[in-house]
Every structure is written in C-alpha cells, then in structure tokens.
Image (cartoon, rainbow, N blue to C red; front, side):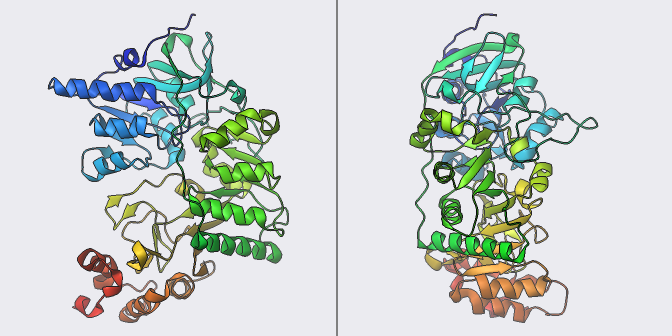
Length: 499
C-alpha cells in the first residue's frame, strides 16, 4: 500500500471537535510537533468563526511547546493526561481552563486499553522511518505509541528527517496482554529485549504521512550547584555504606533517577565514586549525564523510555550508534515504568520532592497544595516497588522563605509507607525501622534547615505527643498559611493557632 503524503495542515483538517488524540513521545523527545502546531492554528480559526473546537490529548508524558504550549494558548485542549511541564499549559490548568488528570505514567496505556477514556480517534506518531506494510520506527521515545496506534481509528505519521534512521533498532516495542490473560513481563536484567524494533500497524489505518525536519525541543537543565552537589554526595556516600553493610549487593543495583540538575548531580557523584562499581540504569528518562557515564564505562547499560537529551548529545548517539546500539534500549512507558519489573530488578529509585513532612509523606506536584507544578510523572511507579526509595529536595525555597520540610504536606503524592530515605543539603534521614515520632525527629534534625528546626520542634511540642502520629490540626498547615499571609514561613506565630 503506497504511503499518502500530506501537509500538516491537511492532517489537522482530519481532526474533529471532541476527538480523542493520542501522541507519541515522552517529554519533548519523540513527540508530534508539526501536526499539533497546525491543529492549534485550526482551533484559533474555528474559534474566530464562533465555532467550538477542543480535543482531548493523551501522551506518554510531557511534550514540547509545539504541542502543549500552542494548544493551550489556542484554548484547544478540553482534557489532558497524564503529565506536562509546559508553562502555558500549567497556567491554563491552574486557571481552570483545562481538565487535567495527573495519572501514573505506567498506567496511561493500559487505562486507554481498558476503555476508561473512550475511543482514540487519531494517533499522531513521530517516526524516523515508516514502511508501506505498516512498520513505524519511532524516534527518541517509546511512550504509549504501541497502544494508541493499535486503538486509533486513524494514524498520521510525522516522518521527521531531523531524527536519524541510525536509531532504527534502539526500540524494544512490547505491549502486555490485558487481564485476565496477562503474563509476567520477561525482563530479568535491564538489557533484556522482549519485543520488536518497530510499531506494527494495519497500513490502511495510516491516513497520511507528514514530512518534517523538526529537532526535539530539548529542555536545558541548570548545571549542578553546591547545594545539589552536596545532595549527590550524600546519596553516593549513603549507597556506599549500604553496600558495606551488605544491604546492597557488591555488584550494585540498577538506578532510576528523576529529571533535572539534582538528578544530574546525583548521577555524577555515583559515577565518580571509586567505591561504586559500574552500574546499570533502569529508568524512564535518560539525560546527558547518563550518556557521558556510558561513554566513560561507568554505566554499563541504559534502559529508558525517552532520550531526553540536548540535541548535541542526541546527535552524538546517532553518530556513534555502533558504540551505543548494545548499551541502550528505549521501551514503552508501561514497560520502563512497570512496578513488576522494577521490583524484580531491585531498582533503587531517586526522585525529587517539592516538600516533605516530618512523618515522611511527600508532595511532588503542587505548590502550596493547590497550584499544579508538573504532575507526579513516574515517581510513583518507581517509589513503591523500589529496593530503596529515596526523595531529595533542597531544604528551603524562595531564598529561605519556604521550608521544604513542613508539619504536613499540603498535597500528598507519596505516603510515608513508601518513602525510605529523605535527603536535603543538610543531611540524610533514614526512615526505615522507625515509628512516626522517631521519623519526625530524624527528619527535623537531619534534613530541616537551621532556620526551621526549632519551628518544627515547637510544632511537635504543641501536639499531644502521645498518639501514634501526633497531629495538631490547627497548626498542621500553619507554615503554608503564614507564607501566604506574610511571604515568609519564618514569620510563624504559633500562638495564633491556639484554640
């Protein structure tokens, strides 16, 4: 069957108001760009005519400005799941303009298959190659592409010449069966391959191929700083000590790390430690730091869902594919983030918190409890089944005006039951084997900033101190309230909350 080449504008015309759209990609890597950009223009034109025009968007994770950004500004999104990082989208969500559903990334594909969200009317898939018999070779990310391609009524392929065909073969495309027929996912080490190097579809469903030359909208992350370097060193030292105790085997265990400068600092510290052997990475997002560690033979293998790299680093992989082809694999997100596999492999998870409370609960999504930042991402997928679960955050924010350690988190994403270790630049709190009151003192003394230690001690003093988890309801969110009223949590006056 011959491929039908069309323009992005022609592809956008195939989408109707109210449609459910599935997109390839995971972060800006591998996501649709040209058709979504044209779709935003179409939405603006329809709105100018007085016509309603909004769609629902389903992705692997976040996208780039040419998708979430332009569609949000064009008021073209009714509903969106499961994750985003775009500022314009965030503003629209917090302004009540978009119904945003923050779903665990490992569950997005299966919930689409289960029919929770209705039909998928169109899948828009970025590829480096597509064949007439229906083989789609993905680019820099796996995401939910296999599922949305199978479910979609129509498929549009963005054939992106900015993505090298040398990446053909990096992907391991595997989709599990649904209950009651699901079997174990047969990954027993990070380098195992269990699927095909392409997404295979009925070629009749491919209604158009759009030629593009659009590099990934790579996100730059701040370089590690003294604060994040200290967090990285604390984690490295902690894991070395766990090896010495025999808790972590001498061969080490696979690492999962979140996104950003703290994650890069942690990976750098692990890579630079002579006491830690060369290790594997089993994660969702692979950043530049891991690529450098692979080149330096400090990381043996990287299993991921997305090459979230600078374009220079991504092109470096494409040029050196003979070196990287047996050291990298890109999986769909329900495999890269699958709790069964994570627990089997013994992955050590390291993720970032916005705030943590004195009992070990973590908020990783909402500012002051109500304003969405980015979403939970894959942190929940990795935290609960992890061999050791670690959360990190600087002890303060906004120049010290906000404490990242509070009596109670204002929004709960990860419960105390799932958090083993909490780390700030002040130190490491080991919560294992401790009751709630013991955890509270551990976190205050090891992780809280000196400006807030006595404030948090006072909170505990004002509880009854006897119950299993001492709670002073009037004061539980007093630090947050103080910040909203005065702009600085250090202005807390506990007497205001006595009733």
